[in-house]
Amino acid sequence: MALIVQNEDKVLRKISKEIPISSITKPKIKKIISDMNEALDSQFDGVAIAAPQIGESLRMFIVSGKTFDEDFARGKFTKEDLYMKDHPDNMVFINPVLKKISKDRKLMIEGCLSVRPLYGKVRRATRATVEAYNEHGHKFTKEGVGLLAHIFQHEIDHLEGVLFIDKAKDLQEILTE
Image 1 (cartoon, rainbow, N blue to C red):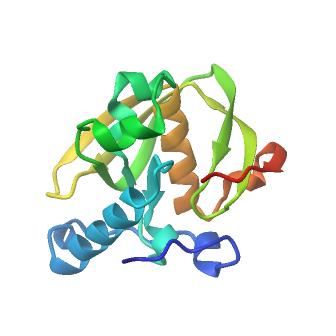
Image 2 (cartoon, rainbow, N blue to C red; image 1 turned 60 degrees about the horizontal axis):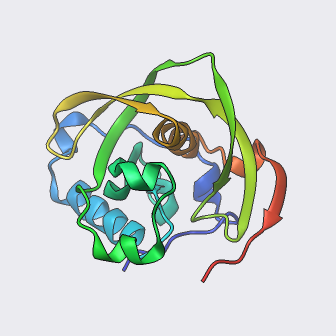
């Protein structure tokens, strides 16, 4: 299984390289996507993961399918739900570009699989639109509102070598099970 690197690792501070469109469907990228899915799915509280978090300095992130569940997005979700419910598949974003973000901002609590066990409040746009390629090499656009908009911005920061702790207020350690 791919290990999730922690914030001392230099790969998290590098600007990630774009993936050539012709390479998206090649075995190397498929393997990295598989490793990212495995790493993300192994974390009950994980909502997304960027390639640098498994040591790959590439412009790619994956959003957990559970984030597209309305109950999860509203916070009406128990830990057991995460294992019992069927969720949409994780969504792959390759070479993502933020096309639009709202002027409206909201402070939300954030954590990161690479910055355990710290959490803090980060002010981000409440709406964000991303253009990217999927794992089949098809270009698409996805709008995110609330939590999903926050996730898009957090993950694109990873691709720029920025961690949420660089922006967060009221950082504190919170230990989860």
